Image (cartoon, rainbow, N blue to C red; front, side, top):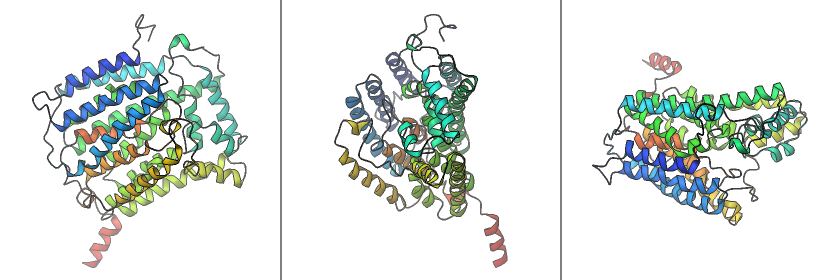
Length: 436
């Protein structure tokens, strides 16, 4: 950006102030000061100080701040299904204004990704990718190299040489990269750009097709691009790609097989979305469960079979498979995050409560609709952040942020239940015809 806008420099702290003021100006309902919408906006802005503390190496205080705000939002998401009165509170900006704002923010976000220099982490990531494709790395070495917890091994290595490239230009030492490494670095940045674009388009489509309100979809998409988290963690492949799959799984909820494939891919890449399966299976229980299950299993089987390509023997394959499904995630040792500064043994009851809560969503709320699917999915992905190991200096808001924004802006969706929204399969239609 320095070559286009001379002496342009917008540090994270300044962006927090600007984005917070813009959020209030565009979305705050001044004539309904104590509305839930205004409280939601205050909560979104409240995440920013914690992110800044983490980014400035004050992780202990930063993660405490984020945990407190996260707990407040978890309560908000869990009681969302009983909030049946959803008055239409449109933003203070028109659809055209929101579209212009969103496109401008997206252009700056893409420019932030494209114009930063390649640094040593790009070359290191390419070297690791070569090793794993040549089957010269064991699962134990892979776990040591991996910086983002459980999930699909190739996706983790793919992410390692994109996540650290957005550094101030003055601190970046440009390194001559081999052509292959350069192409792979371009691929990761392209994945980030396409991931953010997919999230934005998915949010807009959900507003247009499922909320019956384009203005609402544009508002949620623009707010996603405006929030400080999106600008701070722009280049995180492991954040944005799974989030895009989750958003499009919601967009495709009327097609259970497609939704299952997307959710299965998200779960295979980072493991944690697999905790959404009890909720989503209960949503499709009365119609679409088999198609949804086939989609999830098909996606996971596909990812599992591709592990054969990077496995030198059966033990190596089983090790990679265990990494993909998070076999070692519940270890007490942690490298970063909230539990680095607190007694890790207390993670055990937190994990137990989290798993119990995931399975309790099978029974509550008893009537599942698109609104409960959104809020409870966001609650599950937010709940993951209370016990996982995020890696040094990061916080995976993208996994729940788009779903949270859709929950904040959604109308009453009590009529969007599986039986009404999903067509019967051909087999069931034929069976019904035969019975008649």
